[in-house]
Length: 312
Image: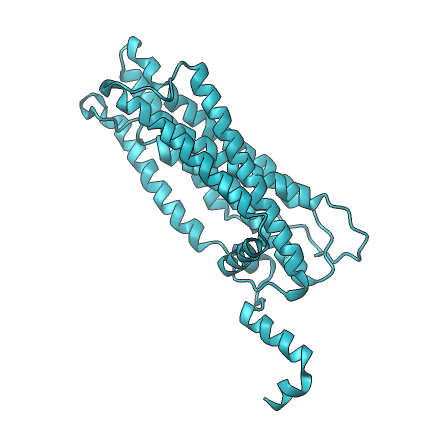
């Protein structure tokens, strides 16, 4: 099972990395992001937006591949043989290890996206700069309740693992090591999301008009969301299974309660995340509506042929 996870992850992210070199794919990535956040891609910004989206995708894929390599090295040092058959009695432990790897890859992906955002913001430019009067905070891009909820899920997952550890025999506590590692990975991801998130928001980028400034906010919003989703996925992938193992008879109800509440909380936060993707528009650009791709195409056609547009 573990060897399949590593092979599948390496192939998927390597292919995604290669696709960012194709112009048509970069244009598709920009259009997809625009559809998700409710923005049209202005023709004069298309090249810049596509380049930044492609850089973000490449960096995220590299981050995921590095996390995959680190996970492989960590499991090897821990004495886990990736290619060997696993005894039936260790199936639960193997699944938790697999979830821990997937969680680490998710966080590596988000850290790569954050690096791309910081690199784009550090680009030097001598163009005239348009800026807003007040600097936005992280809450303008990610709802504070989502960040608080992420920390609450971490507490629930850690509580579940701790309760299970207290109920195990001393010689069986070591079997929870992958679960503890997964909670530790999630903790590191949440701390990084707070630190990197503030840096991403503080770092500005030269913008010549409002459209470019709005798109900069859109890219920063996606980066902040990735930084928070990574740790949440890490918790969801392994936190519940750390408690709900094949042998349920040995699990205390006191441990099942925080684990199940945490799993339900993750589902709820996932729905809120999906519905809250355009928060930055409501907070930073209230009442504004960006051009859709079709509207932009009609604007370009009208600018190219004013007489024909008037006749129509």
